[in-house]
Amino acid sequence: MTRLSIPRDGGRLLIVRLTSLGDIIHALPVAVALRAAYPSAHLSWLVDHRWRPVLDQVKGIDEVVAIPRGGWKGLREGIARLRRARFDGVVDVQGLYKSAILAWLSSAPLRVGFSGAAARESGASLFYNRRVLPSYGHRIDKNLSLAAALEARAPSSAGDPRSLFPLSISPDAEASVQQALRNHGVTAYFLLSPGGGWISKCWPAERFGELHRRLAARLGWRGIVTYGPGERPLANAVVDSAGSPAPLLLELDLPQLMAALKSAQFFVGGDTGPLHLSVALGTPVVGLYGPTDPIQTGPYCREDVVVRNARPDETTYNRGSSYAPSMLSISVEQVEAAVMRRLATVSCRAEAARP
Image (cartoon, helix red, strand yellow):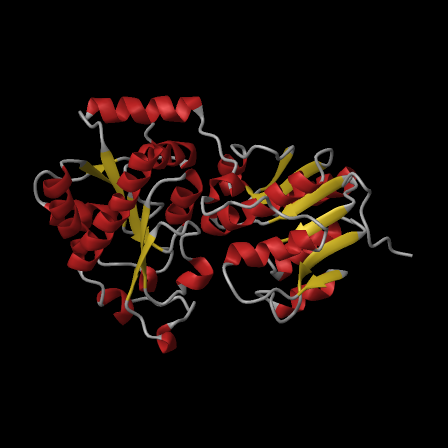
């Protein structure tokens, strides 16, 4: 008979969330909840090897199991490693056939995942033996409902979500970023992120350029443009539109991106991984939202600001290949005003903290 419970100390637990950056960030509170409920448990995370550098900086995870991208040999080795680990319980946060099958192949007796109505691919629920139907709300709260199925709850964040994201910064990455900033004479800076996974979530590069021109003149800080693989032309377009002083382009790996985000005065970007990583690191955020719903995937800090003009019927997660009208409706003036509102909140908190 299949055992549908885990040892009282948690035993050996596995979280499955393979991709992508923002979704992995939204799954980190599951690890926090499991660690709080089962301090003695051995907690592992199964992830695509591209995102391992982020999880290597998460406190409370004992082991990161990275699956190589492509190739049956690497996949077979990863599956064999899962079986040898003899996990007592698996929590699949992804809800796809691939993640669900990997959870099943681990041979863990208890496999927790979303019900067919809530999983991204409904058939994935067939591979779980404990299925969860979460209520509508933020993706983080949806993910935490999986931990609750194991009687694990994250500590209250009391409006400050950083306790839900136990990220550390690599000293080598921090030193590398600081040296690059010194080489360019940059001290205080803000970050702009024009990319977005698919173009319908993006805001035009020319508007980011104009925004940089306005903010640099108003605040006296230099802007840095972050970009992912294949996004260098987009970042160049921001620089070309910004005039002088132009924003700085820095090619950063994931640990370096974390270091740069941590020290930034604020971040402006769409519904992307860098935005959610900024929230996790406690950096003030202004999020630009169009087709995607900020109720589900907006900044998890209540002090961060979302700019969105979309009508309810414009909400979609379809991957459009052109700018969404709801993103084009966002003006530079709106975003500049949102930045100033967010910075005012930071100033108020700093004043309140003074002795």
